[in-house]
Image (tube, rainbow, N blue to C red):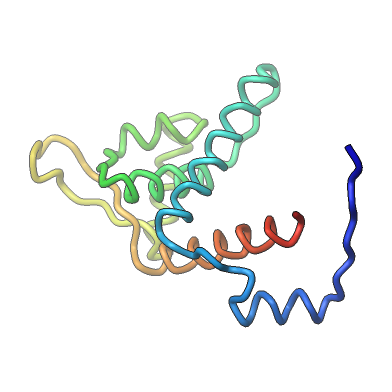
Length: 143
């Protein structure tokens, strides 16, 4: 197979990204699928490099919550801590920090008052969708 490298000027790339021309499908379903792919890749990496600790608890929790929201699933604090890739204490610190920044909120589970559910706030959703749209556009430009 022959790799073809196309070099686009910085101006061309900026114009594509600003115009939205590179985003033919910025749909929620496409964003969700991209986020799931990123999560799957992070899990595969961790499985392949078992002795190396790749820790980015905040990012892992953001990805997990975005996917859970897209699938209409609620995540309890304890579940999110387990999915963070770090210790519970570290994960709780990250949750508190992200909550203080206005990205997460916590509240009682309406079905089980013993559980506390973590949800994303609009500021995080907007920032994440801006980032994921850029990732989608960048992947299309590299094709």
